Image (cartoon, rainbow, N blue to C red; front, side):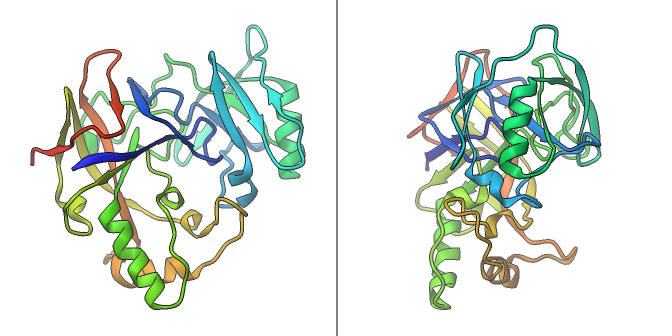
Amino acid sequence: MHISELAIHPLKSARRLTVPELLLTPLGPAWDRRWLLVDGTGRFVTQRTHPRMCLITATVAEGRLHLAAPGMPDLEVVPVPAPQSVAATVWNDTLPAQAVSAQADAWCSRFLEMPVRLVFMAEETVRAVDPHYAGPGHRTAFSDGFPLLLVTQPSLDHLNGLLQAEGLPAVDWTRFRPNLVVAGDLPPHAEDGWQRLRVGAVELGVVKPCSRCVIPSIDPATARKDSRLLAVLQRYRARADGKTYFGQNVIIRRCAPGTALHLGDAVEVLE
């Protein structure tokens, strides 16, 4: 098995960036989901309610965020000095974040046609991963709850076979917004049975199946929804709790500072 795709999402719920390597940090992949849009109450804004977010391209250069979107001028986000602290809420976690700039707020508000604010998570911010799944001492940024998300190519191929059998178009891995895709000679959803992986000197923990919301039904190229994909997925991936699962949430159990995952790296299942 090997890593076939790598991605980060600097702005939560914006377009993914494919990358040749993932530098690992205490918060997860470097720059992954470090920026967030919040509404007037400080609650996170995502594609779940605003599908147009998938059309925003957010890139990072020398620590600065750059934004682009259809019909909008490109924007280099210049942080204000001594940024104001803002309370930001992601699901049930409310944590301190930093306001970025009024110019960025106006840009994002104009594109989404609603008032939003762009905030940033500082490196020292502690947002704990649920210890029930991960154990103590693990952190994440503005992800839904875990620092890494993994899917496998055979699982995606199996889903596409079911979609095409019903006359529906195939989808690619970007619909599921993972950080890493693992390919190789393995059965569909083999990842459901994994607990520990080794990639070079990095040990990863596979700690929780990922329940899926409406986002995989949104075409990242157009922002259009097609609920038929989720209907097919639900028929064979729904569990007794009523949720539908695809992919696995992952934590970093062991790695040296400055370690990265690379395209093509061999992946070994330890248990």
